[in-house]
Image (cartoon, rainbow, N blue to C red; front, side):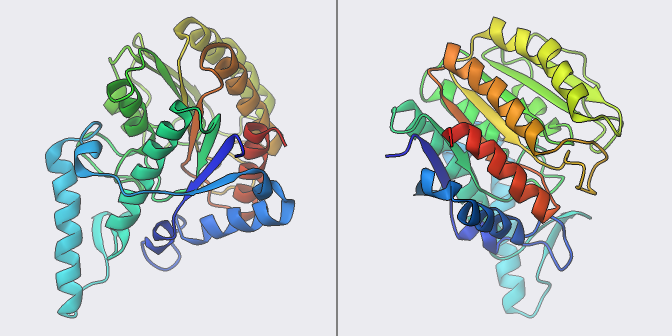
Length: 317
């Protein structure tokens, strides 16, 4: 078995939020095509994402939040049968369709199944090609294309169900992972390090660094070399001090210079470099254990090339 797992499910393609929405099923197709053309897919162990249970999702979310999402999905199904709207909007940018609940369950399930497989030593690391993304989903609120916070849930699952004493979350999406911060802030078992464009949506990250939070805001048009320097100075010493027993990655690729969703200047080699640095930490402290989950990335070509670069490092190919 390959040491790098690739978790996904066809249900993740069935969630969509309307014509022209940037967080679209074609994102996963672009990644799949790139892994096929490049041959990188041949180095991966493909695994089907299971369905998360409601009880598991409540490790990171309030019971009412999970119940409300499920209820909204059920109501939408009934309304569609009666000729009603195809989407249930949570905010102007975030909506459910009739297939979204299953996609949410598969995405959360992928993150936890990847955690199980890596903890069992069946895999050294894993990438979850899932959608909807998760890092804007707060404990009790869906927003920013996100409903359930896959990475925060996996980190909570690792400490609560697998008994790990210290884990880390690294988030390099162009947007601040406000939902992850909301869920893990002040949980000293979980160190969160993030770098993101600021000021920018969701206008978070202003929270002063707590014992377990390293927020690194950067201005628009920051280039990759500057991001690398900041990671060297601010992320790596805190990760070394924390000695995480497992690392989770919120892998958003919308900081790419070709992605119009943000205004940062990263390229594929920057994502490879960041992944290498995190892998170095994982080798020293985590037995190589990494679970990475797809977040943003909306220019399909740049997304696919960046995921390839990220997975090449994870899989040593």
